[in-house]
Length: 285
Image (cartoon, rainbow, N blue to C red):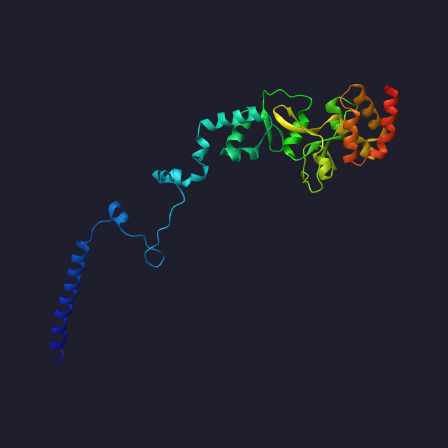
């Protein structure tokens, strides 16, 4: 009995092994090779085999046409930066504005990369932080006033700078005297040396004229208002400068006594200027 049991067990093991091998071979023969079409048809799976949620791609479809372009997509310029008419539009704006600010391009839909490329090519010149002009533009003696007006649009040129602009003084100030309101914002890091003077709202608006300097609108006080301001801030500019400006203004007939008296009432300088106006009137008569 002991010898008969192993003989019966051996064929059983062989049969089972044969059936298993045959079944696996059939399964392997039915496998389909993985092609590109088969891989694209299979849904993407996540980390644990679950279907992966499709997210909307932030990139345009043409980025996926090449693996290299998709890899270096951050170095490919955007479609808006490659428009050929943006450079000519920017040059037209710079010619019309005189002094161009980088922030002015946002209203026209022009990216700042176009401005940087024109600057690198030498077509534009940088005259200050965020200020550009054409390289062949004519620079006048009042170019600094145009730069200040672009940087501080709400300011008004006053005192010594206004006297120099109207030709009422022989001094050449190394700073730009600028009038601002009580709550006016002053530039944090001005590239041009500024001397800011605070004016009240009534005094800030009175006598402000707009002049075109290199295509830039610049606000400057008229001669009569400038003379009165010099008397008001005589501790800053000096009384001799105020008296010289008053004599030159009346001699050149750039103001009248009525205009001086009107601004003296606004700036509360009537008591201070009355003796000087009376003496000047007697001297002229």
